[in-house]
Length: 270
Image (tube, rainbow, N blue to C red; front, side):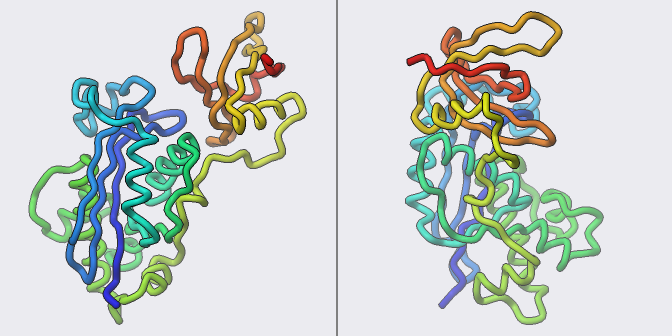
């Protein structure tokens, strides 16, 4: 059977905090040929950070009529099916998609997520570095657009093909690609989570995230008196050395991120 893979890339609306999908592009390759494509802009729930627009060029006006992430992810997961996935710096893209699947409460694609960054470090060691654009230049691929999702998915496919060509025995199975990369992950492995057991005072947040229940936080940084905030919790997660809560602030209607160590008390509103 010809090797069948979905090669993907994401662009995000923010550089910091929980990832917010802005654009998703992918190609399906069978036997070394692209046979299908997926491309979608996303209307995120947060404003686009101007610093990200400087990278990918996507502006608010471009996504005004786009679908929300939940709808795009439902379509994408159905399109992927059980195919194995490939991305460059796959931990990043896996995390982006895992957050959106968690928010939308849909099961992510179950296939392996293989990283061409890992593959290229092993199979193209002479490249000055292993960023996608550098590899394209090093391999003397034709010039074109970078930092747009579909374009970068195609570049990633070309890097993948170059890596396969350099294997002593070119891979014909997903298992052989995983072995060549040294390891692989899945989108489920990238899902938002807390490393340690949640503190007693924060436990109502677990239920609130699961049940989509409104809570009242007593929240403060210690420099000033704590305030009471009505929020609708969505996701609990670790980033770096800290734990966070992503929630909708019910007074402003905005999606905000709260440091868990600054949440002094949680009370269910009902």
